[in-house]
Image (cartoon, rainbow, N blue to C red; front, side, top):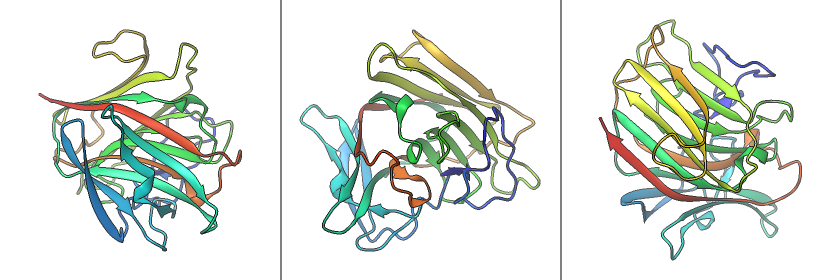
Length: 257
């Protein structure tokens, strides 16, 4: 899940890019996971990614199933941590066993996602597995450049959309009132995808700080797809601050339309 030459641009148009470039946020995220375990969270079954002693995309990175767990409150933890014995950083990813179509996808997130290290990526998205197509992303990352905006919304075109490019909106925000935030997008059939960010945990638009809409003439996927959540390192680069990162997802909800 990476993003191409974003610099300070607010809107970026992408055509034929590899997903290890900062513009393509799919990043071969399910490349050859070595083992798959499962957990239950927010009423759904999720697959947990593990790459064993090898790397896998996006990144590439090492993926450790021990870096994902559900606590006694039912909250999902994603952790990025350094394994001193192995001498590398371990990342975290889950993806849903179910596929989801038109409707609203919402996450209640705990953590300072506005101040993530420039090499760290948190992704909340749905994705068909076809890189460069059929994907709607909410990503928090500066893609290795400290001056890049932290919040990235991206919609990749439908499979078979010749000549179509990805739509993107980027921005900054500052969490001054705590560590809780709500992030959602709504797939309105093939008409549009509407993204929203809010301070705090809300099911309405209270404390809305960001809204962006992707609408035709861009091509929007009509597929039902799994939902992914991951915490990883852009191009496999070490966090510039050398710190572990832990993000807590209090809930994921999907409301069909």
